[in-house]
Amino acid sequence: MDTAVIVVGAGPAGLMLAGELRLAGVEVTVLERLPESTGESRGLGFTTRTMEVFDQRGLLPRFGELETSAQGHFGGIPLDLSVLDGAHLPNKTIPQSRTEGVLEEWAAELGADILRGHEVLSLSQGADHVEVEVRGPQGTRRLRGAYLVGCDGGRSTIRKQAGFDFPGTAATLEMYLADVRGLDLRQRMIGETLPGGMVMVGHLDGGITRLIVCEGGTPPKKRTAPVPYEDVAAAWQRLTGEDISHGEPVWISSFGDATRQVTEYRRGRVLLAGDSAHIHLPAGGQGMNTSLQDSVNLGWKLAAVVRGTAPQSLLDTYHSERHPVGARLMMNTRAQGLLFLSGSEMQPLRDVLRELTAYPDVTLHLARMVSGLEIRYDVGEGDHPLLGRRLPHTELVGGDAKTSTTELLHPARGVLLDLSDDAALRGTAAPWADRVDVVTATPHETGPLADTAAVLLRPDGHVAWTAPSPRDLGAALEQWFGPA
Image (cartoon, rainbow, N blue to C red; front, side, top):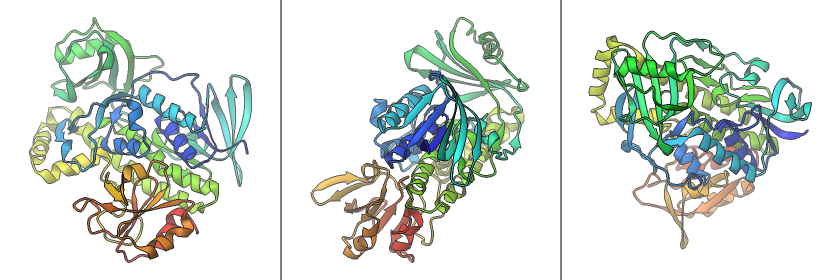
């Protein structure tokens, strides 16, 4: 083998996966077609769950001071995100180029081999390997790995080469996205519905204004070149009456509302993550964030299988857990598209939904949906409210030292929290010491772990087992971390 895992695509999903694999000591080679990063802003900011994930890996300080906001929306209906139980509010200002830069530096520091200017031409699977033909600066060569993960975007070569089915609906409209200098527009962070369409305005660093423009009755076009700024300015003026023709475009793109998802996230030794597996209207900035969380779900599982500590069946849980998440993402983005981008015929429904969000339970439900906090995986027997869910940041005291569940997850290992000083429990977990850290600690008496004797955390921060439980701890350890 040339490497253990080949990752195709050096976007957020591919770089996050590379870092996760390296934390587990697994060799990984990232192949990226582009010779250098585009520097384009694209995905903007982090949901609450992504803020948590980055914090769990100690990455948040690398982004510097982060501006956060409790202002969110569902299809243009305002939501107060302060109702969430996380330690972080979402960030809406970090451009994707910066996210990629931070993740690439982190993955490279951990030892990931990132090869830019390398395009995958074809792939083939064997009984125990995947082989790709790659064209790079020194010509064409073949590269072999035990597994391959396609993180190469909505037009994924890997998805097509490996024969994944990608059903869904084609785009019915076209929207413009532009970063522009020299504009003085009032901010419309959650967008504004107008008689002829929708506009959105956000203020970024460096005097750059982010614009999104959707004009009603604009069918999607097959473009071979970027949208001319004149088209963006003309659409903006038709919708708002404002003249932005004097602006200096930094970057322009167009996108539609195509909605597709692969029927399976794994075919043998080839897996897909991020936009390679699902595309949708980028409502609420959920796309990049879901892609990052795909990689965090997959990374520790793939590493365990590669290292031989867990059976290949563990990889099946990647599909069973993340495919429903992707399907629900497509459902909520389609719903938001209908609310936000339809004409006046949708106004009565907007008004009703706005009334409903006055009820705390409705706001909490929608806020958890768009923030990635509603996810609950099927991890086995038990009725504890945290079982299968992510564990919110929790302060802990162990001996004379203070720590937190967030800090304990920095190495991306399993964690057994012994919250009742139970020697028998620690003895049960001892055979998994190479994969699971055992920590005896005391949580805050009113926090999410109150009245809980023990918790088993997976490396992605989701709760795999709690005590008391009808299920044996050893069975849960073997299910998620392989035989002792």
